[in-house]
Amino acid sequence: MRLAFLLASLLVVFGSCTDDNPVLFTFPVEERFILPAGLNIFTRHVFIERDVIGRYQEALSSSQFSDADVIEIQPGRARLVGVRGDEFFGNIDEVIISVIDRNNPDSKREIFFREDVRLNEEGTLDLFGSLSEVKDWVSGERFDLEIVFIFRQVTSVTQELLIDLEFVAKGD
Image (cartoon, rainbow, N blue to C red; front, side, top):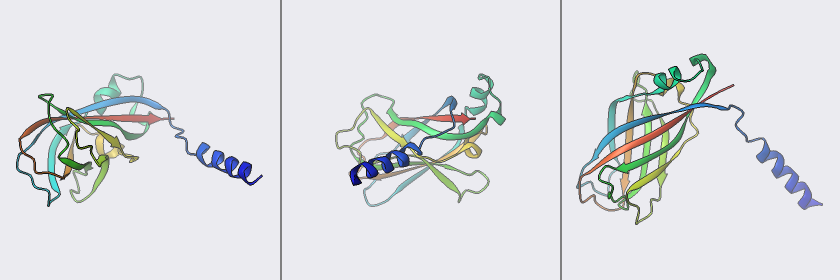
């Protein structure tokens, strides 16, 4: 009897955790980034990418929706892609990408992350999206990103990366 009650309780709890807002459209954001050689393991390495081109307005105009229809924008998927195709990511322990408020540089919101990167990771590094609502942050023509790296080994070569992000616009 207790097991049945526990299972019913879990069903109610997990059943109520659904996202009620349907996806209206998605839009990509891409930014090229240089990860220099010689970065050590003792520091959080913080890089600021300014004036990243937002694609929200472009995606909105090609959809049948208006800005008023979009209730929220959430991070979807993201990945770091080696431009040469053979980049090694096993020296990275953690990566965090945040969007920065252009009017208040001290204010930022984490949008993508990856912890405990596999030691043999190469080519493409998939990141996880956070549950942040970022419509006010990424709906403009341009926005700023903060990229934080924590390394487990010193970077031995300079790597040219493509930061490939996707955001999800949701509505009623």
